[in-house]
Amino acid sequence: MIYNAKFETMPREELVQLQIERLQSTLNRVYRNVAFYKESFDAMKLDIRDIRSIDDMRRLPFTTKEDLRKSYPYNMFAVPLRDIVRIHSTTGRTGKPIAIGYTMNDIHHWSEIVARVLGAAGVTDHDFVQIAFDYNMFTGGFGLHYGAEKLGSSVIPSSQTGNVQQQIHIMKDYKTTVLLSTPSYAFRISRNLKEMGIHPDELNLKTGIFGAEPWGEAKRAAIEDMLHLSAFSIYGVNEMTGPGVSGECGQRNGLHINEDHFILEIIDPVTAEPLPHGAEGELVITTITREGFPLIRYRTGDLSAIMEGACPCGRTTTRMRRVGARADDMVVVNGVNVFPARMGEILGTAAGMELKFRILIDDEQGEDVMLIEIEIQETMFDADIKKLQGLKSAITAGIERELGLAPRLTFVEHLAAETGPDGRTKLVVDRR
View: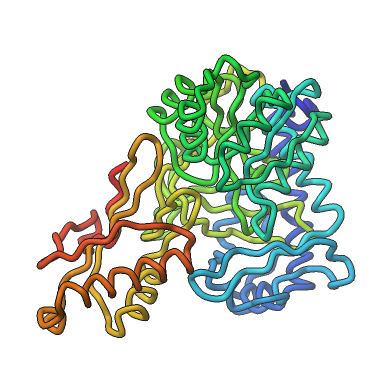
């Protein structure tokens, strides 16, 4: 379903012109109201009136996650605090959190773009939509909730819970037709269905819309086979709107970008030079309608590519490939961002010394499993089994407390030295 044909099928020339007009308005807003951008532009002797085309954007500076952390909490807001009606934030597990402010218009736009991506996946006002994403400082549950309500769907805000069987009871009793969750949570639902002796055909599920962690075609096929539904991918960035940046249509060949709200670029993650359509690189996003928290050329760290060619669905919006990896060392495990640097801090705090380690991620029956290999230090050779077991327990407890993940730990005599394409030793090996 095309929710908003005016923008989703707008002729390309008109869409690009709209992007430029909204970009110029955004640049004026941030220059006047956000000290970070004014100082950045002035330092480059950049006159924002010279930005007259999409290609001209290459002259604009990048914004990074570190820039946002340094501006915590409100220094990146582009409106007075009295105009902010909502504040979400990142977890802050790698340092200071990032506070993201929304005006009422931002909330309305958020609802609109999520309604589009849900509509593209076939969701209608006849559906019962069960949202198994958290409703907290994380943006996921709220954005999906707004979009589904805007479509006129019946929303079931079940939130993500450790009690998967309760989710299934809700699903069965309320006759849920659309499930929104992480892919790994869908696998947990499938396993619990088997334990409860419930066949997927006893449910009313027809569509699953998944995001917040990497997943490929193999997982899509497995989820569809296990839950007897059609699985779709969505993409969002927590520092912007969370869900709503892009989503798959019925063709399921790339995610349609809401280009009247975002301008996407692909750059080489090492040189920061722009890459042509079709080439994989780091995804850079500029918001062009955000009032409270506009971002200029934000480096997401996600690897993707801009796809070429028109989509048979009739939308004229550009498509992006599904994000499957990160440009930095961060890895997503069961929907949680895991940074090696932060992991090192957790291990060091528990052990009272700096530890050499490696993180390995596997896929076991559709669920992410994290194994941490720790190299035995000389001081550990004198420790008995009981002390090593105590250290192992302390590390595990620290990771569970800080990240909400339960890893497997093993001590090794020497870590395997695996290097990436840049020659650096890989601290994270993703084998999913």
